[in-house]
Image (cartoon, rainbow, N blue to C red):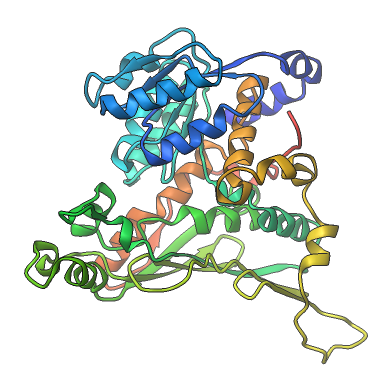
Length: 426
């Protein structure tokens, strides 16, 4: 198996140490708003060069090329010859990896082309939009021996990694259930400017109904539950509310006669999914980006000895000496005691960058794996299993919430694989 090969490589510590100073050369495909943010962060990592950038818009590409040049680096080669021009970039022999921050439907084609060209693939979330694409990522990674890491920054939040430490050290006892969800009112990003044309993300809402954006929520939960490292997701059932948010937003902004005020959208405003694991754990997963609300990923962890609530920012650990004292505590002292080594070493630097430091941590871990030629902490099996939730929920919703099985992308290896190593420093 691919993962076993990388564990053997990771054991060669002398080789890894020798590789520490090696420059990592990364090409970037897609430098719109999100891609540019990642590029800025990437350029702050030590020992990183960006020899090539691709985008379908010449003006956007020129801005990114200028950004790299202003850091004192050589101006990258630019590619903008159409949506397939990324193939010329990934074929270059002076790249170690390619980072892909394009619209969703291009994530898998670019990642697959990258691995086939013998390079590490970094892909924005979700890594794929269909079951077939998920399998294509897995099979390509296994065949080529090249990792594919979905850049799930929520896995690297300070509280998420502290809770991971707490789970692994048994603070909550035996894990039973988690609750999570991408709950974020982003309607203002779905109407595309003064004319109200739908963005590419909103166009997915025309025909798809399920959880279209599961990875920010499920990624941390999968790490806490050791998914693919002793357990796995087995099946889910899902249902959605009616669709009202996009119509109402268009009516407020452009009037009742605007085409989007009258258009029929398939995507329900709120999707609720239940997931079962092989070892009897459960997950409640929400998706809500069309209803008015503050941002909240929930992140509830329930074990046999206690509970953590990210929404409340509270924690409760059972005290055997006072079993009836069910009072919440502030988690600050737990965050301090169980702070992950990655945050101890890089937290002050990471907090200068996006998503509460998550962007910096994610890219640092990817670059470290490329430099040392080791497996990425979020591997292709994670990338596939977290992304496949979208098409599976669509099937369940369309079938009156019928249970839908998860593919076993590891083909049984989840029972033997050790938990992912998330290490500090370079």
